[in-house]
Length: 205
Image (tube, rainbow, N blue to C red; front, side, top):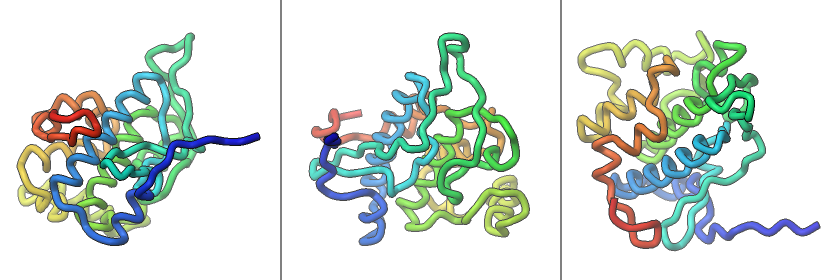
């Protein structure tokens, strides 16, 4: 048996981040592409469950592609077209949403959106700010939960730029999955609509 894959001539996003921190316009462009992919997957009833820079491959034309569906799962069925709850601690710890550790069953799509929010911080700051969201195990995550409720906010997010960008990242990293932005909602946000893509990935907004 031969398995044929599309080429990612420029490796993956993790390798790029090992070389340098991305400028804001680059990070925003990749982020919007990521959410276009997630919106399609979720519409088709598929959750990736391991969104991280290592699984986002890049082409020489600036196209980002979601790869490695080894942990993916179908959460929509003919019996339940609105989506079923899923279970299991799949994924990479620093990109896993808190409900994965806190609940036996949880909604599928919000876990991908949480991971994508962590990817954005990684693109802008090189490293995510904590190692795990498992309750009581990471003081840096506890600091995030404490600071996001304060007027001055959580510094690594507050420093990301515009008010709209900051609000979106906070919403994607909301510990309450039911309040988290969906992929479709992100693409409808003021920030997403302000992000221009290069011609090779559809051009414009």
